[in-house]
Amino acid sequence: MLGKLIKYDLKSMLKTIVPLWITVIVLSGIFAIKYWGGATNTMDMGNNTFDLVLFIVLFSVAVAIVVMNILFVVQRFWNGLLKEEGYLMFTLPVTTRSLIMSKALSALIISLGSMLVAMLSISIFSFAFVQGAIDVDALSTLWLELKNALLLTKASQFAEVGVMIAAGVVSFLAAIYQVYASMAIGQLSNKNRFLLSFIAFVGITVVLSMFASVTNMFTMGNSLANSCISLIVNLITLIIFHIITEVLLTRKLNLE
Image (cartoon, rainbow, N blue to C red; front, side, top):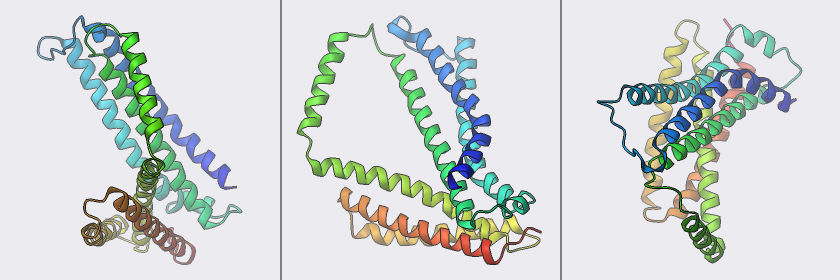
């Protein structure tokens, strides 16, 4: 059932954000075509209206994607579980835990998708300013050097990269759950839900920042230790935020 809930949330969100993803990639492609090959490898915003308009549109769409991701995290949870729609969602034959997890995992998937689109767009945009045509031989040499470097890479280094990636993903998911926990606290109020949610979010952020500054003192200069501690801490905080959210929505749900 969790899979069906995630599919439902993703279907709703993708309708809005996929056109933005496509627009960013297409605009980046237009820049790449215009400036590819070094014929004209600099943008003259002052004298080229087309460049200026295109860049403004590209920047605006990129900002819109960021804003939409934030709105998805907040709105899908707030409207889906804490407003009128919550009456329907909580009558489904699923647990509160599944409802919360579906919102969090859907938001995570959409956010990771936006990050991949951003990386692709930046790559296309950057390649547009490469001087001269692509040197196939140079690319082949670069690939061989990269392949040899990977073969010489120690297992511990791969493990370190893996821990860093896992820590990043868990950290992002913990941030989503922090928002959910704050809103779960805020919904306890009948009149000032948004204000209480904001205060709860700020208060939690201050506590986490103080705790992070203490843990960083013991891992200074050790990237692997930092990543491991970050992974553990964020995993613990994620679990705590989930418990807070689940308990409040199970025992203190306020849909008024």
